[in-house]
Length: 432
Image 1: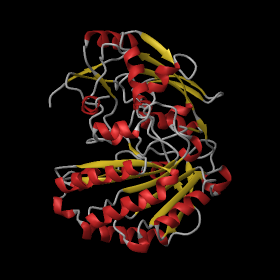
Image 2 (image 1 turned 135 degrees about the vertical axis):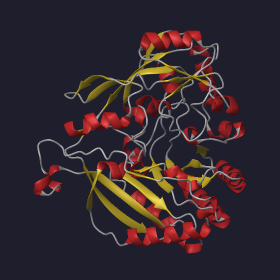
Image 3 (image 1 turned 45 degrees about the vertical axis):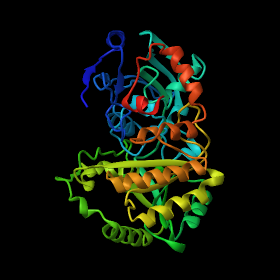
């Protein structure tokens, strides 16, 4: 597939680009796992537009351009004692991308998704006009844009609220759970912790099905730090590029035996950790960012990520079916994550809803794709849905069944983009 890459640098330039292109999609840093930021016609990069426009630390409020990288924002905020209210699992995303995917993090059960903390967006709509939207001004456009995967217009600027922190450290505890039932009970009894996430073993069967390590955490207060680390300025170090995987591993390197051995060792080591520990912000929130090209673990053919959410009442039964089928297949991922989500997000196509979300990586091969079709059927039977930001192969029927406000989204898109300028390979594949 070939496409044309263009860039914009300011609102006037973005308006000009939109009016000149009959079809386009905006791209942030390209961290989606599938095709939502690809176009058969024109891809418009937001990266050159990356300034902090206003930072009001008295009110904890920021206005920034949509192409600003989260990593650069954290470099500016954390030493001043501020953090973003919600963060995904990588620092290498743009703020506009965080809106378009309405990202959620380890604190969704308490804080909701990112757009809950957004006060205003400045956009270029399908008419080629500059337009502001918020929960109170043009709310239909705002709700469609939050989680709308860039299909409602070009997000130019984002105003959102920040979170005050005292230190750049996290107090973390590791809670071993010998089964899925046990980790779900721990999630619910640990809801007072602001952050929680579980690594889950996808290859265990029987009573050990779903054994996990639950990580809970909170931002460390000054008194949590040893005396030598207490400074007026927050001690924050950008981890930089970290380690790098220099080549693609052979496809046979990841198999049921190697993954099972890794999982057993990882669970055993985690089970030995007891009591609270101090960890830095970056390894707690962004563990994979410390390894460049980690995708090379899956070989030259690459991988796909599968992320679903199941409603709370169906989560226990549905997760057991999913994990049992994955274990039977022998295609278990060693990068498997379970989170408890809170209330439904307000975006029309936002992914989160009250329940449990499971995210897994699978090598891109025919066996895995057949398995994913089976997992789709289980997810649908339990009233769940898949995450558009992670999707590379969902069917239109899966989308229709999982997103009840899809028809309303289409109506809002027609209002603000009547000529259908904003389209991606994903939106055409799914008929959005």
